[in-house]
Amino acid sequence: MELDKDLQARQEARALLRQAEQAQKALADYDQQKLDAIVEAIAGAIYSAASELAELAVRETGFGNVEDKTTKNQFASRRVAQACRGLKAVGVLKENPQEKLWEVGVPVGVIAAIVPSTNPTSTVCYKAIIALKSGNAIVFSPHPKAIACTLRAARIVAQAAEKAGAPKGCVGCLSIPSMDGCRELMGGKETKLILATGGPAMVRAAYSSGKPAIGVGAGNGPAYIHNSADVGNAMDCILRSKTFDYGTVCASEQSIIVEKGMEEKVRQEGKRRGFYFMDTQEAGSLAKLLFKPNGTLNPEIVGKSALKLAQMAGFSVPRDTKVLVAREQEAGPTRPYSMEKLCPVLAFFVMDSEQAVLDKAVEVLTHEGSGHTFAMHARDYDAVRKFALKIPVSRFLVNTPAALGGIGASTRLFPALTLGCGAVGGSSSSNNISPLDLINIRRVAWDSGEDPAPKCQVDTDLVELLTQKILERLG
Image (spheres, rainbow, N blue to C red):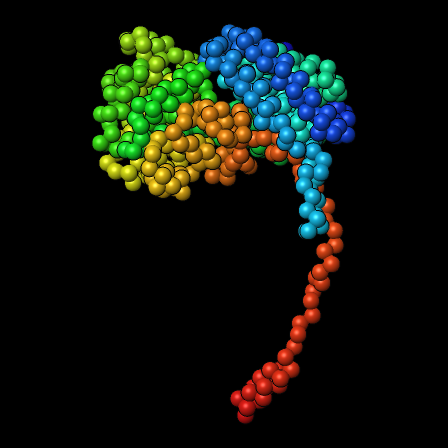
């Protein structure tokens, strides 16, 4: 039966890719105005269904909470569509008469999109918008844990797009959970680009498929509270970020780093806001739950509240507890608190100096999270500049909740749910992925009128003098 299921999944992928290829040929003739109308229709449909999709996602996956997942769906629809308004992605993008050069935006074609279980409906909307905005067709591969809610979101998107004039088949979604089907989708001859958001294994599979791919790495961003920071505001930001959808946004903080002189103030401000600083025994009990023996994140702890996590670990916390914090000093595979934890749990590093903080932040990110996100809370611009020049990330966020700042909700970054990590993080892009990452640029260049090989002007007097000098040396 498994073989039959896998064969069905492969056949479904092939059929969806063929439909998408035909649809994209039609989309390639659409102008930007027509594509924009489709984008607005998609955004409106998902925005209207935001709560329904959130409830379905939480019920199916067990991750996060309905309120924040609703906000994610609204962000991925209305906010992304707003950012796309006025953006030119297809047709003539730029004309430079002086340089006799044009730039033309050309869709890449059919996009295979991997959808994570942590953001299964908002990712569908966001990726569909940036794909259709740039004239591409898209086929989604849902996470096995989120098939129903991802399919529902994809069907809402497809129906809205087609009603607005998009060709049938421009948005597709696999319905059979199978790695064979996903591989067929990524490796199909019609697929021109893979947009991979998911776990490390899935991202590696995308990059090894032989197709161009935009993948993202793990987030493991530290938050540095500098001695010039407004500590209360810093802890408010971290609280908002780390509890948003119970920590399932990869840009959310994974640790707090401070100098010794700041430790007590951070603890006091944290306790007032529901941060619970675990003792050694409690931290040890929770650590056993965070990761499986093979080193992968335990899905049972993903997107659970702090109260639920403490209960699972067998210890009691006050009812107003929002975030669990464990003291840590090292980073590495045997230190679970130094890694990405998609739940409201933080490591707490206390260092001797600002330089030691910088070194520790780099150590943490080098272990996991290179290229992703770093948060700093400071009012000292020189300190911010010092760290910005050294921290190996693509998003360096200042005085803002990292989960919201990283995706562009509380910053001016492009609003995105796929966050590139650059070469240092093993990604092909360091951008918040936008429609402009999903096009090729055709350059139209006229003859410049310049001589490509200008004749050399020979100084005959100099040549004669040099010849004479050489003859004199020879004897």
